[in-house]
Amino acid sequence: MKKTFYSNGKLLLTGEYVVLDGALALALPTKFGQKLLVEPGKANEISWKSIDADGSTWFEEVFSFDSIVKENKTISDNPIHKTLIEILHEAFQMKPDFLLGNNGYTIETNLSFPKNWGLGTSSTLINNIGQWLELDAFELLQRSFGGSGYDIACAKKDNPIIYQLINNQPNYKKVAFYPEFRNHLYFVYLNRKQSSKSAIANYINKQNEIGKTIEKINAITKSVLSTADLKTFAYEMEKHESILSEVLEMNTIKEAFFDDYKGVIKSLGAWGGDFVLAISKENPSGYFKERGFDTVIRYDDMILK
Image 1 (cartoon, rainbow, N blue to C red):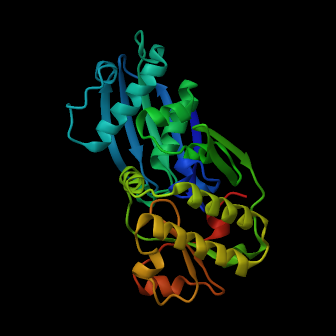
Image 2 (image 1 turned 30 degrees about the vertical axis):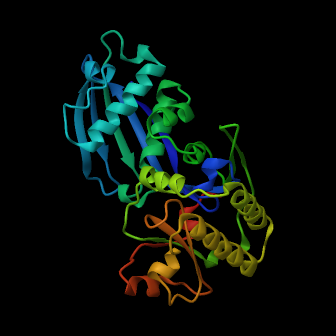
Image 3 (image 1 turned 180 degrees about the horizontal axis):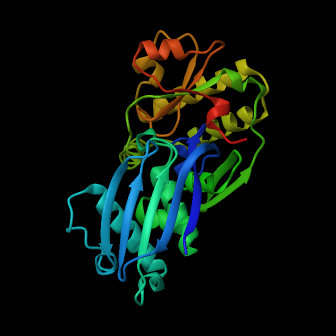
């Protein structure tokens, strides 16, 4: 009997990095996501296939139950293989009976966004596995990738959310964020995949008086939620960039790549890769495409209400 599970992708509008230390973050589940299809398969093995948004197979492998139980990462040099072994091993640790007996599984994953977009290939997978095996996806994330968990919350929710770690536990709730000025908001893909693990490590190494930074970011998140004015929203986004620029000791994305852009550009998630938010009175697609950035998506085409 085939079972199907689905999880939403994610973008983090406010609170990147500092969400790890308890800052209040505004996170946006996307209209793009990932499916997981599970069927009975050959005994004592998992036959796995991962399909990209264009229909191409980007990973295919057979895992023996024994390799998962023993977390044997030496079978292959493929980093995707090693990552899946790690995730499945941690799932086994949490629920051993899914690999007992003569069970076997045929699993297929289907992305509705290109895997390099950074919308949550890993988080949607972990949440789908959590649904399939009835596991706590937040715990599975911590056992494997680590991170704040906001992406898992987005995977579960079909609305914008406020997310915060309180005593290292995830707290999130639905919020109304469907601004009238959303027609001036665009998401631009930078054609550069950024590693969340390395970005987080870099942030941890550069923390300094993080409490004061969290207070400032919390105030920005609250202001963004309450304003109906595009000018105020743009000002808060610009201020957010400036604060994180100081913490990370990095140039903002606008300073690094788009210093002649007339509007505001805000990083989303790990700095230097994946998507950014572009605020503009006019459609900025021409500006970005002239510079080789062809993927420019309107707010309504990206974000769930």
